[in-house]
Image 1: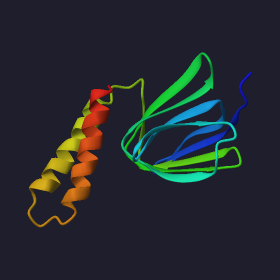
Image 2 (image 1 turned 60 degrees about the vertical axis):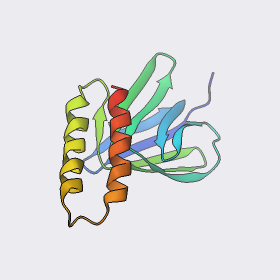
Image 3 (image 1 turned 30 degrees about the horizontal axis):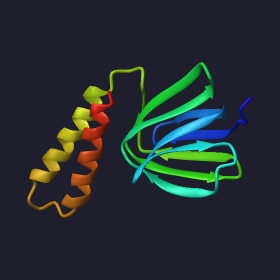
Image 4 (image 1 turned 60 degrees about the horizontal axis):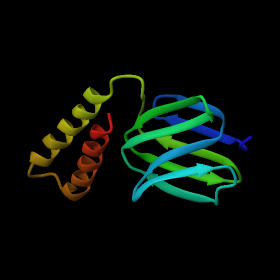
Length: 131
């Protein structure tokens, strides 16, 4: 039996999940990474993508997250995200809407953070391919 650890996922709107899990797959800024029991302490940014956790072999949950941060300390994992959309919902429209918002901002000549928006757009386009 795999050891479990505590996971809390909170979005700007509500608490998404709180409970014990066996693993969490996180879309990190430089690639996806897996958190298991006794993971080394860390803090990392989360890029837009799919976050997946497993409460057991037959029970996995998947959420599209639009970005956030993860903290891992002593088998307690806290994830704060801008938004989380259950993976069983059709998230293509949501991701496409976010990409459209970014395109609007990129077309505005007065916008100064175009490099950051370009990176976020790339992340969203990659997430769209995974749907």
